[in-house]
Length: 169
Image (tube, rainbow, N blue to C red; front, top):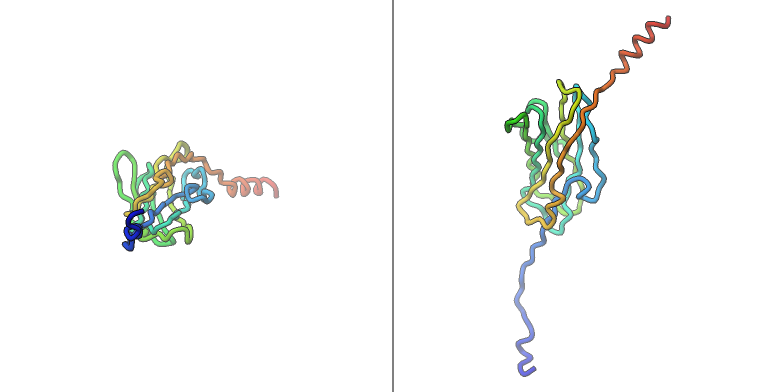
């Protein structure tokens, strides 16, 4: 080396870590939602929401779309109501949850989605849930869940029991 003085750099470079926002099993956590809906009434689905890091996920938001009317769809994130559901056409509704900044790895949080299946006694409810943020995301595969939830009839056992009790004095 003829000039060893040029082998050292004293400059600094700021490196910002990407955020890896995630949903469900993409957060390395078990899914917390049921895999079917009860027909003819209220249901609550729950999903794990997180950030695998290494950096924060600013302006994080959840978008939920389901093929139910807007009056049958609502959501809460950390117990706080999300924006009201809107009709997006084709029998489908959308609700959006503004989360703010998701800190990496600190904690996984839950979004609860209330789906009322009044008028639906069988079939499937389809749709999606997606998380986005303003940070670059190195793994977009864990940001969206496609939903295809069977609607199963609910049996009212209280009516059956009361009838049976009336038959036996």
